[in-house]
Amino acid sequence: MAIYLTKESKVLVQGMTGAEGMKHTRRMLAAGTDVVGGVNPRKAGRIVDFDDRAVPVFGSVRDGIKATGADVTVVFVPPAFCKAAVTEAADAGIGLAVVITEGIPVHDSVAFHAYAKERGTRVIGPNCPGLITPGQANAGIIPADITKSGRIGLVSKSGTLTYQLMYELRDIGFSTCVGIGGDPVVGTTHIDCLAAFEDDPDTELIVLIGEIGGDAEERAAAYIQRSVTKPVVAYIAGFTAPEGKTMGHAGAIVSGSSGTARAKQEALEAAGVRVGATPTETARLVLNRMGE
Image (cartoon, rainbow, N blue to C red; front, side, top):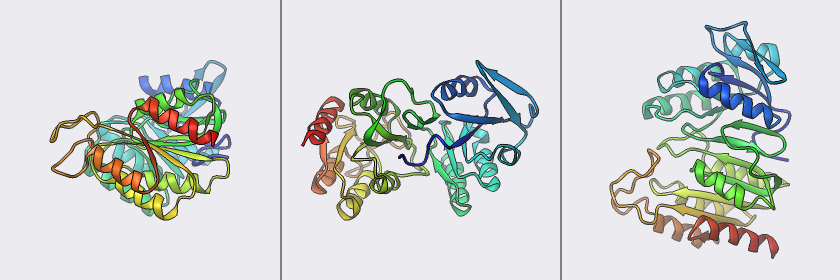
């Protein structure tokens, strides 16, 4: 099985006809994703050829859902238009919106997350690589050829570290890998994914990747202690980050005594989570735990 995305998922791409949308739609199709349409009101009615697949362009998400039964949208539109894009998708009743775009104003993210939640649409992102269920479907920009289907569930703030752990653990493989994004406000959290992986019968172990800033990892640790029975292995990026300096993601900043990598590590270890000092050590901890 998997979480959030399967081979039955039907995917729309908002912004498919732009440069990034075109590139990654081709990659999603090559990974086996059922991309059923793009959305661009100025290019409605066109057909875009991707190798051996002809993909129609619809004028709205609602039109795309009506014509294809789509239940997922991947958003590649510029930051200024993301709020409108996600709002449109939620109004149309899409089940999952994966927002790849970075640089979205925080007040826009807060608004469209709340709006989507009220209408039953799950948002992953923004500023994220998306998610992949290897061998079934890929919604976003995660490279599909660096791992295989397997028994590990992965939830991560970092796209790059997602790819590294996927590669280092490729011999075991993954049920689903979810990049939730590193902005101060994201739609799907570590806790959401932990709960979903806990309920997924094909996920045997969960890898959690966090980073400095905020308290998401501490809250995840409390949830793990309370509600997760499967083994969890973690890595926290940013042990050497200086106080007050944003590192990489907009949300990766240490303010005073909160949000440090050390505090997150201590909280996770107190919940019984093994925490690696490096990505490679984290992979080794996973391999050892899977062999127990």
